[in-house]
Image (cartoon, rainbow, N blue to C red; front, side):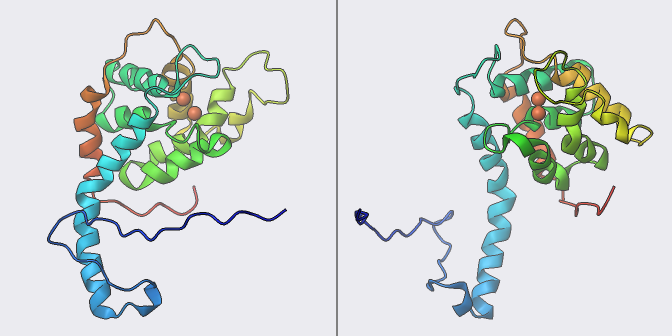
Length: 210
Ligand SMILES: [Fe+2]
Ligand SMILES: [Fe+2]
């Protein structure tokens, strides 16, 4: 069966700032040094201002998403988690980590911990990066009577690690119990200044290994 040709259109994106310039070449292999210098100058300003807006927009897209069974959707789960961390007077970074820990839950379900670790890793401590990457396994410890293979003691391979206790605490106090429709969360607006401060940090390279 012949595949119908799609209607194709060219599209040129508007610039983030009206006084910026496009590099008027359609392939990066044609860019010369001056093009890269201009692009990098605009890039630096773009990320400094827009990255956090994109993070907040991404969070916002999940606000009204339906649930597949939990009492609350992923957006409200993350708000509950962040509110609980805040109520326990943890540092601001921990609150932001809780707010965004499941940001990949819908689009990268089986690897959403690694997704969050990669996404937040440059802006947070190794303690939080480590926890994010493994939080799915720590969460398994709180699952009883799951109908198929799932190891509630999978976390034990990291026992003795300096961040083990934080992984266990996060799973127990701030993740597994944050699917409660009766829990009253703070609104996203409460957390936005915290998110802005964390993403305004100078990103550090992810440490190699563990
Ligand atoms: Fe998760
Ligand atoms: Fe979670």
